Length: 206
Image (cartoon, rainbow, N blue to C red; front, top):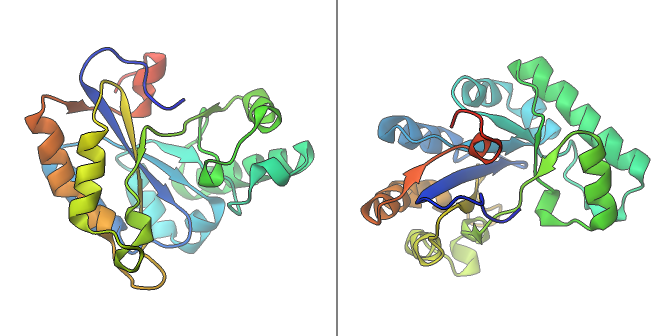
């Protein structure tokens, strides 16, 4: 789903962790300082590479499954998809103590009806996003903290799901999502929005 399906001015900030954790500490400081809930999607590789970061995230936020190796699910067999899900879930739970079900995000958002069916059969709800900040493109990709803020605010709507990342751009090492996050939060609040985790979708406590 690309929005929360909410009628009120609610926004879900979501953060994907795959290749790196360079922005994680800054993001967690900002969320903590501002008292903002968020949801995180971590790969099994991320959890294995950065167990301390994963445990810190899990201490305060829900974690979803983002696969183990971050492959394109549309190219995988059903057996391979299930392996990605179960291997990642086992590592996430072993390291953080959290079962990631039912939250799932397809790597790179690549999905088709077949892969969605397999994921659903494993008791996961796939979450896409309303807006990708494009912060992952970095300054070398023509982005800036200002452009990140502008994209999020331009897409603001009830139930907006924002996609951000925990890593740095591999070329220029910028962490634009982390840099922009305080302004993103302030800008959304100034427009009357409040923040929830993805659990709001199924009626759990936000």
